[in-house]
Length: 253
Image (cartoon, rainbow, N blue to C red; front, side, top):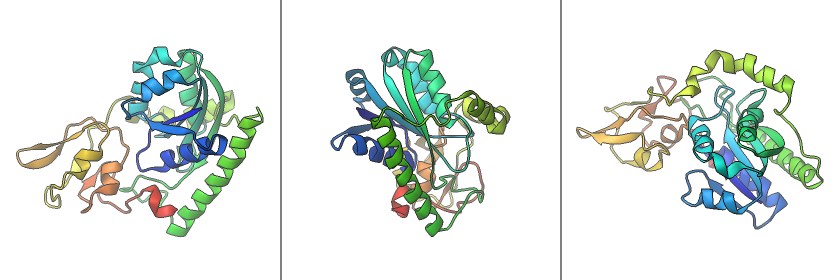
């Protein structure tokens, strides 16, 4: 068994690692950005896949990864972990349906509520103590779900018909255009930016480049919030106009 994930601020990476290692202490996990991830997927039959839900949908980068490598999913047994700030309905089901289209066998799904990573919006902001409690609760749920999977009775959260309707009418039907394409809304405040290059180095899309002596977005943002959370001078925004909190998993452990 291996874990495969896309993670913006570390929530998904942390949860997939905990889940896999609960089942196999030496189990490895790989970001979809890892050079050898496709090779590892091809070499393993059982896979745990995790990602942060965006507007009750998949991050565009993950949807493209799955589609671009469609032949490798045939016959794979995949358990899906979906991270969310509040509610997604069928967060795990969105990926389940896509993978099933390419021949994967979906063994189950798990929804985990984790600290919100949208640092430039006030919505869903919690205290440090509340976020730490969220992580502890998620850890307990991970342990329980891993045992259930080991006992061949894995949870099926987000997989069923009613969950599909809840996700569709709860958010996705209203915000579908937010994840159908990459965003061109990333903004970098030239007055604050110190051109340290950290945002360029950590962007999974290579969406930031130096142009005319300034850091500039290339308009291919997958809304992972890495650059916003790790900018040392809070010069970057996406959905909002100012940074309220820089969010990354290490703060809550």
